[in-house]
Image (cartoon, rainbow, N blue to C red; front, side, top):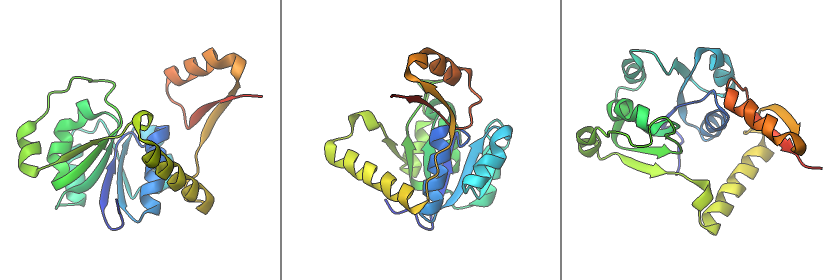
Length: 185
């Protein structure tokens, strides 16, 4: 939906998906609050975030609420299980949380009372199961953003297809600054 004038919270903004989400949100006219680890702050700000906070900061919820007392309109969430309590705290009533991951806690304990009385909506986003129309709309939107220069993917390293195991190990090590690609010749 339309995000112009909305406040978006994007977790994991130092990662590939989060970094792209920051760019798309900013191009869409949103105020962008991002979380990342401190080594990624400069990169996240350069992508368009208005504010970036350490995702491990003990007062993260208070810091976010100080920026938007009415609450966050929408969130793009990498680690739903770990961040559900934070989201319950900082989201505005009827806010929307778009979830694309929860690898560190696949069976989260949900602060249901807070979610209920704010009528928060959870939108689980999985590209793998999109119907053909929605998939094509997503592709068209990304193509439009790329063509307009609103989306600048960062590439950390390119491996030849024969070195796909090394590429996977590179991803598993963490600390990347962009995508790891396989080149098919």
